[in-house]
Length: 320
Ligand SMILES: Nc1ncnc2c1ncn2[C@@H]1O[C@H](COP(=O)(O)OP(=O)(O)OP(=O)(O)O)[C@@H](O)[C@H]1O
Ligand SMILES: [Mg+2]
Image 1 (tube, rainbow, N blue to C red):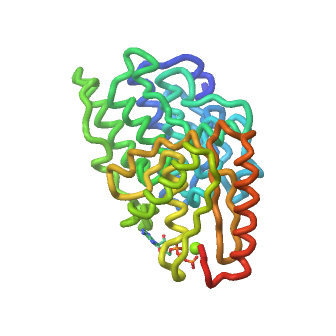
Image 2: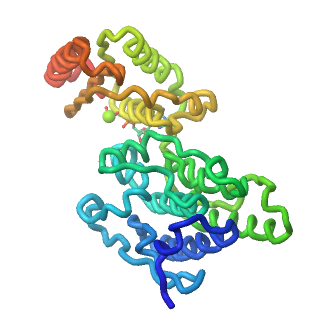
């Protein structure tokens, strides 16, 4: 008899069963990806099972605008880039994130985050770090907890790159668990070979510039006085890439190849007040998150708006 995964995740499942169920879903997702399709709407209610075998993945993406067709029950499983497409263009790796949220729920009995509206879900997926499943429920094997967290990486580049790589690690863990070695951690993703050529979104060689911009943000956070940062340079030098890298650091995603810089991103307590963009310019202004009523916040908006609009009329002075 066919059931949905929704009926199974109401309470935490045994680790082996969780791995087997996720493997079934991952195999179907892998088949879709091999056809050049992505699902993008994975949620327990849409996963039909016969025992532990997958029967059907319902509601796959047919190229429609995700925001127009998404349903509330999938928000707990939606990748950061679906909720905030400015992070980077969503691709098949959004499904890998959803598989991470599903594994998390299978292991712990609840998805990684809770929220009540679209804004809350966006904040959770983009900026909040999930707690490790093994911290939430005694008995969750460390390797499965690690696999869930790898799938839930904010940056798609940090996740498994293919469902096949995930399946290989699940198989490896299931074999180890059958031998009684289920707690033994192992290096993840050793058989995770990207199936398509993909240009990495990592930022290379811009640590000094990132640090300068972060230092400006830090000064604003500490003193509360507004500052305006402008990035200029010839077309193609990497101005937009630098700003997107900074945004990823703000949301806890890796921005550069330097291990120090990619792990020191704890700035989620500060949010950009606004950003303004024209064809050739963009200005950005920060304020401390807890000082929304400070006089400095409105001063920041006023001074930045002036600069941004003046820059759009003198694009040779600075561009973005
Ligand atoms: N430091 C870098 N690391 C990785 N990729 C980079 C870097 N700098 C630039 N790139 C890549 O080079 C390309 C051009 O960069 P980008 O679009 O940021 O330039 P730009 O200065 O904003 O250009 P424009 O003034 O035309 O808007 C992009 O594909 C970007 O990802
Ligand atoms: Mg640009």
